Length: 335
Ligand SMILES: NC(=O)c1ccc[n+]([C@@H]2O[C@H](COP(=O)([O-])OP(=O)(O)OC[C@H]3O[C@@H](n4cnc5c(N)ncnc54)[C@H](O)[C@@H]3O)[C@@H](O)[C@H]2O)c1
Image (tube, rainbow, N blue to C red; front, side):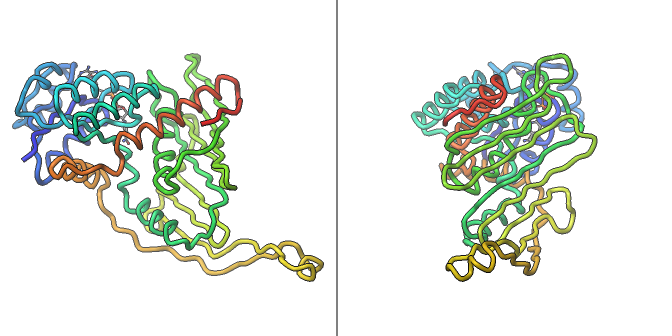
């Protein structure tokens, strides 16, 4: 039985606590938050879990095997570092850190101490994204040409990070999982409209260097909620709509054919294919339950998580590059 401490019981921490509480193979031994009112809420819902305001006490307790950190982004590096130094396995909320060198340091530390360092890139555990991975890996889409991702709504404004650091980790981690490599470079634009210099609308353009280009739109000001991604391939294309209750993924056998011979070219350079649309059946499992179960399994069996520190580092690299590009309104940054 793995004893877990959940650190941070604000907006997201309660979801982690509930899922670890219900998971097999682990128990939530402690909930830690520096705010007494937040702890009072946690105590009401989980009377058997020990409550503390002291992170030091959690780290000093040899009975705690792992910590799940759901505190603000600016605290991730320091808290994860201290937890790893204290010999605890660590699950950190996304994004792993706010600086590339901090993420590198955490990865090296976890590897040196043979501890699990996992980032909550929650979408890579979701059934639709796993289905997308299966479809992309099968080669059904052909060569990937473009990705167009939109994650917009009237958002929960964060105080310590902009919309890129808050929302883009979701889509970047999905694409990282699907294509398995870093882009060659990017340029990004962002705008701040609340008088606080924190960008609330942003566009990221990533170039993978082999014909694949990807666009990400993240936005806290949109009057409507959209969570969609189009993946266009040479053979087929896929649309992922996370808000569609029954058909989250649709695969379109549509596209263009480019003339190959002189004769074909004389008739038309481009011709269009319009085939069937297919929507695979997708399991309806709570994604956080899958993510927490994966963490427990990795700790219990000494396995490498799907969203390990290195995956977290790749996303921080892209976020950092996007931030630098936004400063120059679209200046290209090489990765
Ligand atoms: N995976 C997801 O889909 C998802 C969704 C929302 C938020 N998040 C992530 O979760 C993290 C927390 O976000 P949130 O919206 O819950 O923030 P929040 O501000 O609502 O909650 C953070 C909590 O941490 C506590 N805290 C801060 N510093 C602490 C410390 N040193 N020791 C103990 N407690 C401390 C605060 O008192 C607060 O209760 C962020 O990294 C965010 O990116 C992830």
